[in-house]
Image (tube, rainbow over all chains, first blue to last red; front, side, top):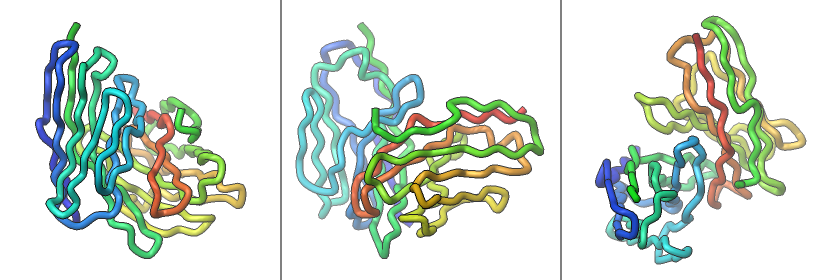
Amino acid sequence: GIQVEQSPPDLILQEGANSTLRCNFSDSVNNLQWFHQNPWGQLINLFYIPSGTKQNGRLSATTVATERYSLLYISSSQTTDSGVYFCAVALFSGGYNKLIFGAGTRLAVHP
Amino acid sequence: DSGVTQTPKHLITATGQRVTLRCSPRSGDLSVYWYQQSLDQGLQFLIQYYNGEERAKGNILERFSAQQFPDLHSELNLSSLELGDSALYFCASSVNPQEAQYFGPGTRLLVL
């Protein structure tokens, strides 16, 4: 099956700093999503980005499908950005679309 | 708010018991998915339904079963519960299997 690796596993930032999170996957996919799991456990959709680049406020993401990686950029980080960031991928086939999650990057933003 | 609702938010029960978790997908979404998040296994896919029909199974135990009803809500039934079943159970939905999945707030299950 598809393997998903995220790096770094842990990240500590001062408020206002920028960061880049990486997601590598082992096979072709046609679904890639980034999620933020907040300290209350909620999984919040950040991006649906099987290819290309998208931006949403201070966050942006880029997926290079041919090279099997995706990057999530967080600029001017805030304490509310703390939590775990997950990358998840899937290969849609015949109505079957299970997401395979990476282990996540745990981010702590300090004031 | 993703538009996916799950009840209950928290559930505490004893080993050997049976519980039912409920999920209502976003309006218009036909696909429903269940995932389990535990400390040792991470986030894992359990099962997928599309318009009432089971489409895919993941690492779902035989003690677990699910269904999607005509009104598209779904239920996940967990029976003969064990301590190791303690986890956060998420439901997600999408318009169709090719589109982004949106996750509900989860049900936190504690088996004592």
